[in-house]
Length: 135
Image (tube, rainbow, N blue to C red; front, side):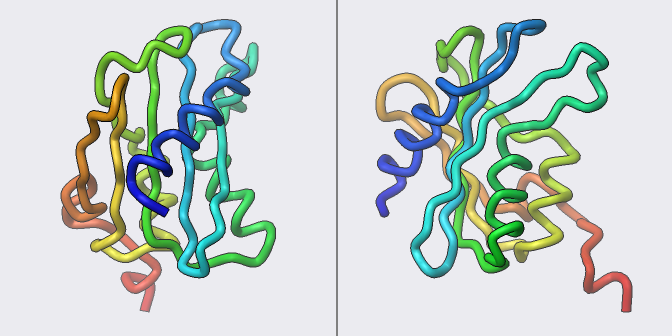
């Protein structure tokens, strides 16, 4: 799957966003090592803390189906599906990524049109804490 196709899958996933409080829609598309794509959207909650981000939704779907090896993730976010700026994952999502991925894991930040940025997890989460740190 190309980077552009993965970003388009994230945009499509964002259409399922449940964001009645912020109006901010987020979509993610996670590519596993075996070529499967797991999508996710943000799901808000009136109590706020039970809210789940699109990236974690995609990861948790994959892990719940037994998948543990990943290549890259595409993420888009914007007010009411307007992806005019790049959207970077929050710190909690970065830490979830680090639990299952190495520092070389690729994060694609998409926006309107075919523009995107390509970063590694190490660039987004330097000096990370991982399961390797637990030994």
